[in-house]
Amino acid sequence: MEFTEKQLQILEIAETLFAAKGFEGTSVRDIAEKAGINVAMISYYFGSKEKLLEALFKSRIGSVQVRMENLIKDQSLSPLQKINLLIDEYVERVLQHENFFKIMVTEQLITKNPSVLSSLKQLKLRNVELITQLIKEGQKKNMFRKKVDVVMMVNTMIGTVWQTTMNRDFYFELHPAPVGSTDSANTILIKRKLSIHIKALFKVILTHEA
Image 1 (cartoon, rainbow, N blue to C red):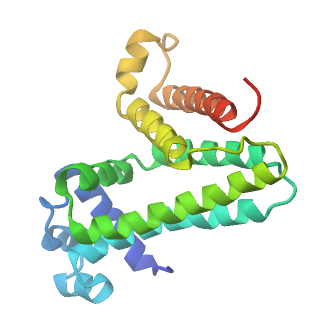
Image 2 (image 1 turned 90 degrees about the horizontal axis):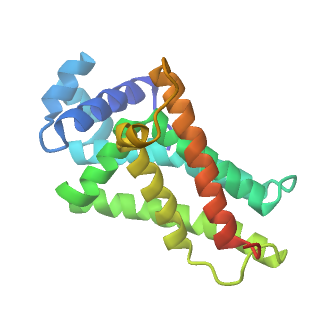
Image 3 (image 1 turned 135 degrees about the vertical axis):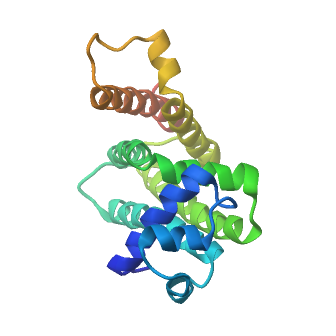
């Protein structure tokens, strides 16, 4: 789905408000006022607040799906190299868009809006489908194990990245960062730790190597 510059601006503002106040706690008027437009403009662009949230999901997740589709077609990389690139990109995306992933968790666990959940489910199913294609490529080349629970594997990555990102202060309490380290440096450190950890897990899950 292609969005205009104005639509993307509205989506970014809505994302910030949804993360801070929750979906139910944010009104269309709140979004309109923050964006400097009238309420009718949001209805014109998106139809409703629910549709606006669905558009936000599609704008964030859709670009990931395009990248995955391109990776699957890339014959210059091995299946494991492609998996490792997807891990790096997922970790990077979560750390760059914490507000978005906070909204995703909230909507799935707390709000449970049927319309939003249905849209999100379809997006997640497509992601699993694409990762399954990638794993099948590795299986055909006898590089990956024949039996792989893709859903559990993906959940492992999502849960690990989300838990670590949202509780990074706890991590640094047990593994102190270097004295004088900045927040930016700590984010880079967390990113590297997550990448190494998940790649090691996936290598064990996918390959014949112990």
